[in-house]
Image 1 (tube, rainbow, N blue to C red):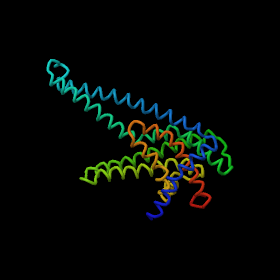
Image 2: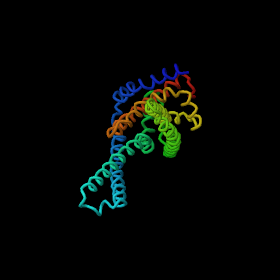
Image 3: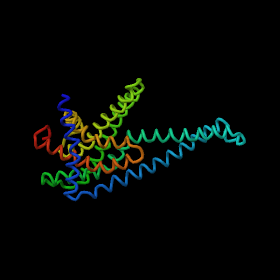
Image 4: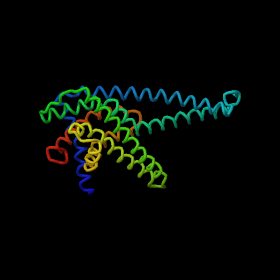
Length: 266
């Protein structure tokens, strides 16, 4: 079981190199612009919102302690400064944690039309089979991507909470927390990227869940590098934006190879 997991995990992880060459060879690099711009906008807006609310929280605490009405006491001013910077730092840490947890799904949900088209384009180049554009089908794909993302966020959030509690265990807790969150997020991100291709083969969402579960090593490998990015402060979202394109291509190539090898895809 574990042997097959690690074997297919390596296939998904090594697929990034294959995907990068595929994108360059077939002149698909312009797709990088879409997630990059989106994630920069989301992150910038997120920072602005956090700054606003941290300022409001700081104002509330200062008012509660009557610090703003007393300005002639150096130690109260010093205390006010400590509160301000504590709230500022904590709010940024919370934002980075939340961004690491769900930031990738914002990219996946909002750019699902782009990723769907990219997956279709990749499969078309690989197989020579053209997919006729249908607005009705595109809307269905977007709705499915949103439903899947919400499902994955709920499940991933539950596991993240469990690993957060586990991280309180002395000595080894933080290792369990980080490793556990990484493996869970890698699997669900990989699942989301694979589903763009799986859906095209007319598998229902339930069938897609079973298919990815049987190929969880590959799914985790596909989502691994994307997941790591969101643990990198500040620039993680930007890095993930670039990699999202490679993730879609990587997952599509992998699913098509599974199809050719008769691994569950009809």
